[in-house]
Image (cartoon, rainbow, N blue to C red; front, side):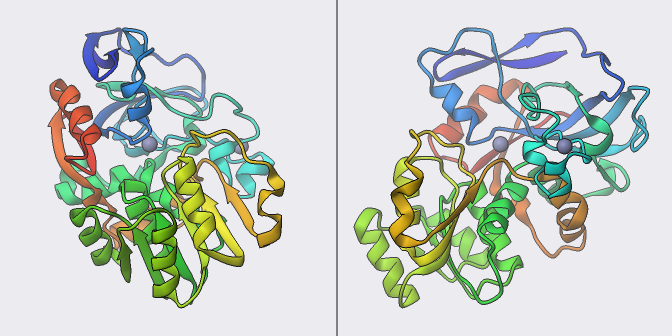
Length: 345
Ligand SMILES: [Zn+2]
Ligand SMILES: [Zn+2]
């Protein structure tokens, strides 16, 4: 089967590898129907030290179960599933508290990679996989796109809003206008925020967010951006949702909050840790980490997509064949597309 590898900084390619096999009793083999490139994959793609042949970090897919291990009882071959990027057990304290993105039992093995390929081996399948009713042919392409967001970006955007405890009537600022930021806007609206301001300099992304429930957009950055947000909100925000992972984004988030405000961060951090005491004078609540993908999908996000209440699939602004995976990375890297989908069959 074909699988994507990093070949050098700024380039990926396909290699032929063996078809994956069931190894553990809780494994499933999935024939991938749609996968995609994540903003987080671009960190490896741009890395000048990347080794040729390094496995792709792709971790979002929907597909058809091809084989299951003996311990898997929740899905069977032929089922259509979301393959979350997380692999919670559903039983440990973290999973039961709704934090399966950081399952206590699967430390170090809780995230997928290598799924920009024709097939994947999905570990800890029994609890973590999310079954979609019917088959891919029962749905429109728009619906398949929304299902694919349920493997990562929609639950991740939702996680920012959840850990920041966004509530009805809240004033919310979203930092990051990529796929996760767009989904955070949708999530803030689902949770009843009264004002949602997106920080964005790109017209197409501003437009998408305004259609999804953002009430204002701010193009300015830094101190100027913070001042503009405060002017729009008539003061500081109740919650800031940081969906980028840079220090500048964290500074922006901390700057827009009123004292006592709440920061939810889901951008994979690419900055050195700040001292915990640095926010003492602001009385801030700070929380963040990997999303609880399976929990949110099973509890409400899959239903919200099936009912047509949310349409997160709009973040996929272009589609490619697996053979064109390098172009998919390039277009995301050059911001020609918000998120690139790979159509496998
Ligand atoms: Zn991702
Ligand atoms: Zn667990």
